[in-house]
Image (cartoon, rainbow, N blue to C red):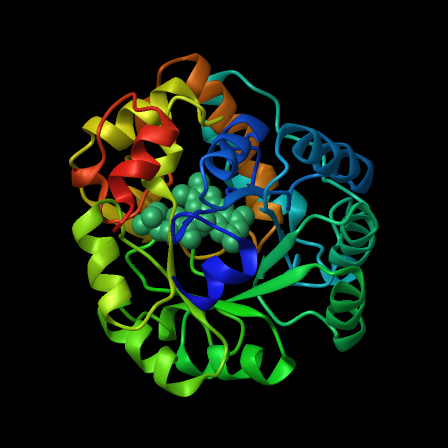
Length: 341
Ligand SMILES: Cc1cc2nc3c(=O)[nH]c(=O)nc-3n(C[C@H](O)[C@H](O)[C@H](O)COP(=O)(O)O)c2cc1C
């Protein structure tokens, strides 16, 4: 037992990591929660009304604790200050032409700003709210506390963990640079915040009072036990759950995760922010726009690449432990295999 399993009444100290960008599913989160882990839903890409409906669906699918995740910082350049869209789209013109898709229109105004989303989230009362890319304003954390919502911040450096601890979050995910997906830095540049899970977790455990959830490169029981030995009170597993049958990831992505014993790479080419995925040709390119514009510019390219089977032009988010990921597994089976008990 740990403070986290006690607080959330979990049978296993295992969090299924949230996936933004449409890769989370109610089915996966509910399966994990119903089996005694903590299921999560990454909601960063939703509009407020969609978020409300999703939390309603999660409440209907499980009576147990589940987690909904948002990004605190949603723009690297304020929307009104960014005027590089047309130039950036022109740089990608050869790719649009090659795939036979039109360049997208600039998304505007920001549909996914943090404030309206977190207001919708608090009103819908998920049992747990986790977040990345910052510390929410104090009134948001106070409103969560008043609503009985457990808050979980994410740190990729000790300094970030201390900032979250001082803000009074209930738990802290310490995410090492092995992790799949974005490097969610908020105090220093992501490139200057690259610490491995083995080094980060015990340093964070020593520096904060809140319980710590270890993340990054954890895909089997040996690694879960190692993370707990380092002082973590639970672990968060992403890529291995993303490859399960209940995941919303495209079948090709799931297959690549399980069979792609390839190198992963940190790249800004897919979203404008540094993130880890399997190395493909597209991940070796430079970003032509800041976040979130790079994401919007790449979306039609990736969609067409999936349709046309152009794996070289797809970014398959994945952590460094993909060699341990097994194909086509049931999420509950994976949860039991991960569980240290
Ligand atoms: C496709 C993908 C999307 C992700 N999106 C989010 C997100 O929106 N919010 C978040 O807190 N973590 C996100 N993560 C991180 C995972 O929740 C988890 O912490 C991470 O995958 C752990 O590393 P692992 O993949 O090595 O297990 C994402 C990871 C992946 C692979």
